[in-house]
Length: 155
Image (cartoon, rainbow, N blue to C red):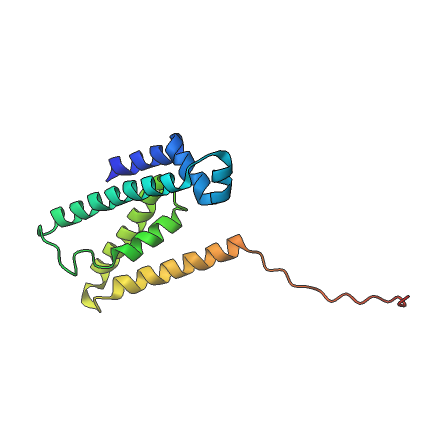
């Protein structure tokens, strides 16, 4: 997984294809104006991401009981979305954020072994809620308007 992550980081940041993905992601019209074939970039990106998803599925199934069930993944897709968002979609930072979430879940599972089994999910949810709230207030500044009383005559 670490090799794939480093490979994706290099692919997205240091190759022509990665540059084309970022340009198409920002604005399709700009990409067409520059001469990038948008449909080709989208298809290539879908093939690469599908291959990475297939590799991830292979690793999950191969690590468990070598069979696919409805509980094989156990909601990890939603966790992966939060990990990638917290890392601001940087593949190398995703390693740290995924370790943070994993340590938090496993630590709460050990601490909360005497209580409800959903205790780790509740703790992770609360922590993520507050991180998202902090991100909101970091990204946006509240400004209150002051009422200005003008003491002049209208002309």
